[in-house]
Length: 244
Image (tube, rainbow, N blue to C red; front, side, top):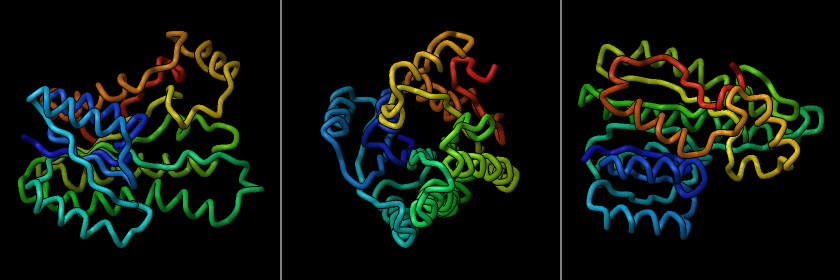
């Protein structure tokens, strides 16, 4: 059973990924600061299903010193790492002129520095196996922009540059690196949008709707599987045509 790390895997988009990928036969190692009832139920359902599995490991990825020993422990517990989904992140919004300096720093550290460091240590396992898949969760606002999300957009844009360059570094070793850029989807990160804003986003899209977390999860499943073996250094947009 191939091991796939999903950061921020206890709820929302990360939990949807964990459920879909475990059903596809992967052992998911869900990283989050705390478990949730939903994650426990998903882990039990995966075990009952008899195909994949969902394991939980507690980690505060904003504490950069935890990352290297975490990856070492995961390899000892589960064996080689096949996949890494860098999904965890803060969706903090606010006008740049009024954001506190420490909030800006926290956002950049968790959304950009942490996934880079986690990729650094996970890719070493992949290099030894000469195979692996790294998928970074970006956002359409990295290219479109959105008022009140300037710092968040900067962190997601940086992940795209990181994706393209790392893909060239490790491609000769059989490792692919891609990004998925969701549009606005129905998760906790969009709860601060009121119904009128959500309707406006849906009306602007080609399909006249917002994508669901499962849509993003299925795109991840594709990139992890045989269909994604020759796709690397690219960005897959899942936004129901908002940027079409």
